[in-house]
Image (cartoon, rainbow, N blue to C red; front, side, top):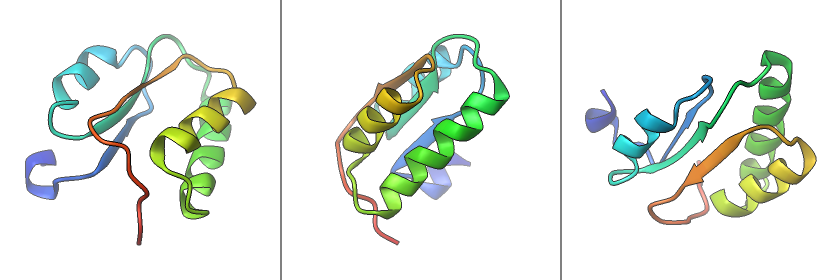
Length: 86
């Protein structure tokens, strides 16, 4: 499915998803949990991250700001930084 869609970014909001992320990073930007994440914190993290993307932040900028605000074990595996547009 990912090969058909060709997404620019995939966020793996599941615990310990780095192995899968490592297999995807050659084709797309990936953010993945590197450990156990509580659901409430993940939802807050996603809300913050996606709101920053909508405001025009690049993927890496939105990731850095979100990590500073909501410290959960997430890793950014980036193929190419970019600003997503709708």
